Each structure stands twice: as structure tokens, then as C-alpha cells.
Length: 293
Length: 240
Image 1 (cartoon, rainbow over the protein chains, first blue to last red):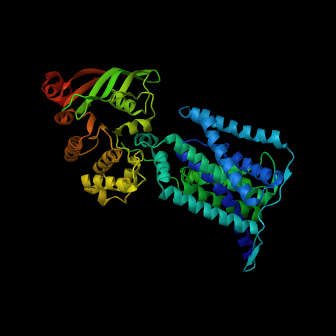
Image 2 (image 1 turned 135 degrees about the vertical axis):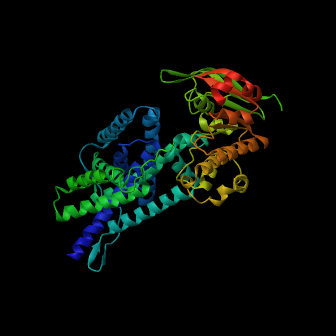
Image 3 (image 1 turned 180 degrees about the vertical axis):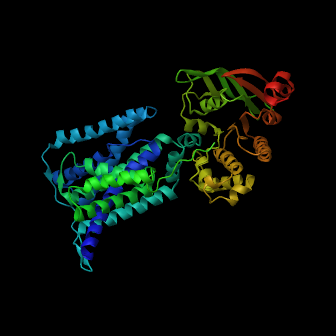
């Protein structure tokens, strides 16, 4: 019993860290551009296909493929912002929201056109042996996912808190007008945010298809929306919140799949969001914005 | 005092949607001066400053700095020309430390990190209380300290002209005096000042010249001393 719960917890941690990587993108973009980039989930899908093209079609080695995938997604994120969102910087939020949903469909349809609707099989690039600790089996992909996520989060946290670029991101996120007044290049900061968010989404996409080993144009939709839930759960705009929210969501999902019902697990996940928002509308680590006159 | 015009605002018109907020404002600031822009709430003082800084775009009219047209430039490039603003309500970055706030202020300055560090030390010398609190987040500072930080942050960009928007707002009379003394000191160290204030008495007392703004138009202008003696102004703005 204990071993089985532990295994489910570890599974949850694995799924949760992928959600967390994606959720960081949502939360950073929200913090800085004050918008929800609903096409973010589809960047994961693009990352998955990009990796497939590198490895499956052009037969490139793993490491260059991973690097190309991450760079491709970062560029895609920046282009998406420049083309679709930047012209709407001062538009009503609804226009931005609809545009984001439109971009999501655009990316899905583009990959449908290029790659077709039939799922493409993909064999995992992670060949790490599973280990057994105290009777609990931890798969290779889980180990890699956890290590990669932890490293990505440490680097991101250091970047945000210790560098000038990170400080200017925090400054823009707190008060865009004041940031412009001190001379921070807000457009550059927003581009950088989209690049980082999409970079992390690419990593999430790679880890995701190594786990599911199949590609289809809608593969980013569900993890995307769950990561969005994770970001709101943790407190939208808060990076530690997105990390915590993602992990909690993954664990809840894994435990409810194992012990309640596979069919109900998604309903439970979204139910938890409703409850958290009822009790604490700002999310777990979200801050209430104080208006000081 | 030289009469070299540093900042020239000519026939400026600014709209908020359909609302005509600034109606043909013209003003100028000469090098080394302290010039005040005085007016009631909603007169357009903040709008004028924000247009100069590039946060708002003018519909027509021009803003020239050292003869260079600013109205089409982005805010961060205007700052690089040497115009820094201390915004209304201070707007320090509450979640950043005092030191980080100052570093953000100097972000446009291209210089070695040693020189930038020395610059921050200069600010600490001017505001010793900021040094004591350099590792605290700005949100934990008192109102007066935040105002000092906002001024220090603006000075970090090495401005030729400092635009101050209601620096006395929400501060005790003691602190208001201290802030105005700081403004005077900053001016004496060679920085031209354009000051927006509701506290007309304090503003006029340190200014060389002033403009009175009423519902988006300049209604009066002149040297600060004679405006202070003017009966109509005394009645409307000085509470006498």
C-alpha cells in the first residue's frame, strides 16, 4: 500500500513538473504583459513536432535536436507576440483574449496541414534505466523529468532574482509605466518573457512526448489548459506559485486517477481549482495588489 | 543664469479618447532653472509631464529638448536624452530592494559597473536613510523614504532635467520641507527642474518661474516672486 502511494506520488510529481514548466510561461506572460496567452499550450505541441522533425525526419543527434527545438519555440513565442499581441497592447482585454485563442487554432491547424491528423508514433529519446528505491520503482523518464525541471527552475529563479534583466522583468511586472519612466525597454522585456516562457514550454513538450510517445496537432491543448489551471491555482503572476500549483495539480491528478476514477480525475482537478478560488481568489501564493494613494 | 532654452513645449494638444485634456499648452524651461507648473486637480499637470516623458502621445504640438523633437520618441529613448521623471505617487518598485530600484534607475546609462556603483554611493550620500535600508524592499519604506528613493532612482539616469510630479503629496509638513530642500540641492548641483505641484506656496518659494494651468490651458505665467505677490493668485492658490 505504502509503496503504491509513493509510486503514485512520484508519478504525480513527474506530470506536475511538466505542468509547472508550462505554467511558468502563462504566469510570466501574465505578470508582464497582463494577458493570458492561450496559444501557450500549442507551443508545447510545436516543440514536440520540431523535435520529431529533427530526430525522425532529419535524423539529427539528440542534443542538437533538443537545442534546435528550444530555440525554435523561443523564436516562435517572440514572433507570436510581435505579430499578434503587440499591436493590441492598448486594446481591450477581450480582443487580446480572442486573438490568443485564434493563435492557438492557427498553430493547431498549421500542424494539421503539415503533418496530418493521424497520430505519429515517436520513440522516447530518454534511455535512462529505471531505479528501485526501497521497493519503489522510479522510471528513467521520471528521473530525467524531475532533474531537468529542478535545474530549469533553479536557473530561472536565479535569473529572475539575481540579474539586471530579471530585475527589469520584475519591475515591468509591478508597474509598467514606472518601468518605462526609468528607461526600461518594455518591448524588449516583453519579448524576453515570451522567449523564456516558450523555451520552458519546449522543454515541457519534449518531456511530454517522451512520456506519451505519440504526436497529434491537439496534443498541447489539455496539458496547456491544465497548466493554466496550475498557474491560477498557485496565483497567476507568481513564479513560485506556478511551480507549486503545477506540482500540486499533478499529484492530485495522479492520486485521483489511481484511487478514485480515471474518468473523474480531470473533473477533480478542475474542482480543486474552483474550491481554491472560492477560499482564496488570488490563488495559493498570489498577492493582492494594494492600491496606495 | 543662462537663458539657453533646454525644454520647449509648443502648442501641445493631448487627448484621452475624446477628452481634450491639454489645450495648446506652451512652456519652456531654461538651463539651471526651477520652473513650477501649478494648478488644481485635473488641470492637466500630470498629463503635460507624461507627454514630455513619452508615456502619452500628443495629438499635435511639439516638445523639444535641446532642440531635438521628442513627441515621436519612445519613453526609454527620451530618458536617454537626459529627461528623468519622478512620477506622481512615487511609484517605486515595491517588491524590489532599494538597491535594485536604484540600479533600475541607471539601466540606460552605459558605464562600467564600478562607476555605476560609485553613482549609487553618491545617492546614498545624499540620502543616508536609503543606505541604511538598501537591502529592504521599497514597499517597506515610509512615504518620505519612498519619495527620496524615487528621486534617487531618477537621478541615477544622470538627467539634465528632472521632472517632479507632486513630490509633496501625502507627506507631513516636516517631510515636505525636507523634500523641497532636496529639490533645491539637486538643482544647485546642476540639474534643471520642472516641478508640478498643488502646494503652490512651497513650489513658488523655491522656483525661478512658474506657469499656472487651468483646465488644460496656461492661464498665467511669470517669475515666481511676482506671482506670489499677485492678489488673484494669492486668493486662488495660496489660501490668503
